[in-house]
Image (tube, protein in one colour):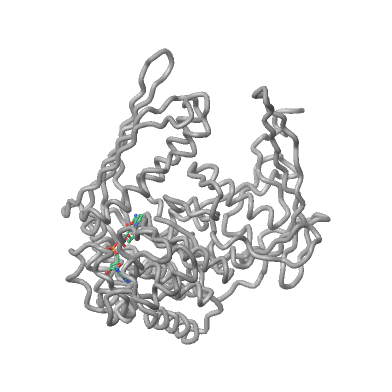
Length: 514
Ligand code: NAD
């Protein structure tokens, strides 16, 4: 079956046309009012929406900022290996290309129950809506290091030599475009690889224009319908939020034109992408999306998403803490140590860049703690510490050591120690693919209040990407959800709504009431 053609929904609320899937969807929520006596009144509420999904799968390009890094070279080699269906020898026997670790390509969801047997029918996530296949992505991008992709894959030291041999020729022909390098934003220890850079060491409008031209040229040269830009370059330091500089869209644009020192390269990339209407996703922790950048995206109805891939330690944390607190166990501290030996670790050995990562890793349990008013008083939180050390010998095989310390029944304690060896780039690469595929899909989904007026897009800030991100960016003023299970449910249920299906409630009454 081609994408989105594995099933059809037969319902008066769903219409398939040649170009669209249209659904009428009843969104059922509960509206709560608190009385003066501290009691709540809960009222079921229904909101009617129309969703319209474009069926034609666009030819899509992915431009990576930091293409020559560990993630950039690994995801590129991985897609080539999948596209060509490669099998390579390892000391444990032959291994074949796959997309394990991608929620879109490697996981399923329950479509419903078999009419004859009442058993679950599960389908690949990729088949719920007509999504781009990663094998069809055209890849390009920028790097401040001029090595070709074969050389950068060697430098990354992630892949088996036998696999590298099979993709080397194709990779060697790929060379990153020169990028913008503002040395103040990344660690000084990165300077020796910066040999592929555009003139100028702080923001300037010519940089925005050059990046826009790069996106347009890439699109034209490869005959693409759409380009997604994703930052997988070094972690930058945080930019100061300064009134009059980066607080509004107009001020941000003026600051780039005036060469203000406080505009980060990632923000310049975001601005160029927004102006080209190319969705821009930030895989690193820094505050690329200063208020002015978010406002600019809203003005242009352009899509943005971020921040910071959630691959190893934090993914475990957002699953485990969700479980512990929802189990009624009072988590009292989390101590997280990491050591890693790749270039990311080298960059993070510098204090200001580490600080970006520390912030990103620190707020990830807040929503789960706040939600449990039985275990925690307002404002009360578990102690939470994050340490990262650079240890060259372990390379890309990051070590994450976590201790979760919790209070249980009658003053007892539960201590969970985790030792998680995260093959960093092999965990991050499938997340890049998910961010791109889901981000692209969201550009083809529109909604309106049922029957009323013009269809419009989702909000510019794609919080639906939260599952893949450590510090999810949400539309201004809206809450952040870190709990992994909720993030997955939001994603799958929004996709289901687009084909007129109810959220999967897991009540399975058919197995309980008969
Ligand atoms: P890396 O250091 O191997 O790659 C980053 C690349 O970006 C390098 O090739 C560097 O030359 C390039 N670069 C730096 N500044 C640039 C600029 N201004 N323009 C273009 N290129 C630039 O790092 P990595 O392991 O591939 O990780 C990439 C990013 O993803 C890091 O910020 C890291 O913190 C983040 N991240 C990674 C993981 C993971 O790998 N599991 C998880 C979460 C976040």
